[in-house]
Amino acid sequence: MYIPHMKQGKSQFTPNFQLCFFIIYSIGLLASIALVLAAIMAVVYILNLTMTVIGEGIAHIASLYSSSDSFTKLLLLCILGYILYRVGRAAICKRGVR
Image (cartoon, rainbow, N blue to C red; front, top):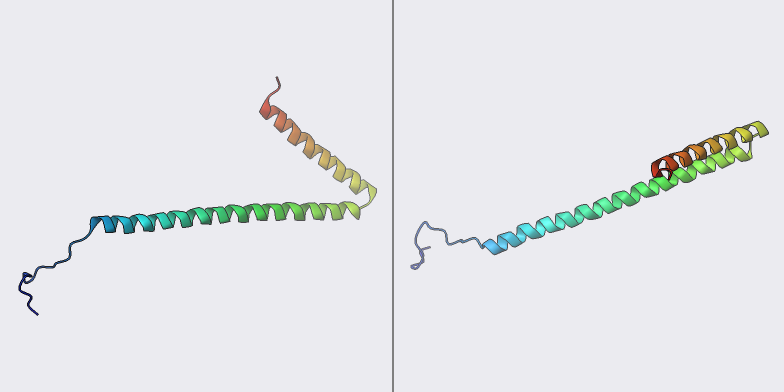
């Protein structure tokens, strides 16, 4: 179909720079928001998993302690004391003695 005011063979589409910029910017913004939400969800999942592991470990150690003989209880208390000593010593060395 021939329209008199249009030249033949020439496209009338002129890209709107502001619209293209807005589309690219909004897609990037949505992707950034999605990545931030995914990172927050991953941190929450890892913290939940860590707390579950700590809770299960304490439950198993408590069960072992409650059903063991006196030597095993003494051994567990010595191990706990050694761990607390090492953690306390590391905290003091890191902070420094004044």
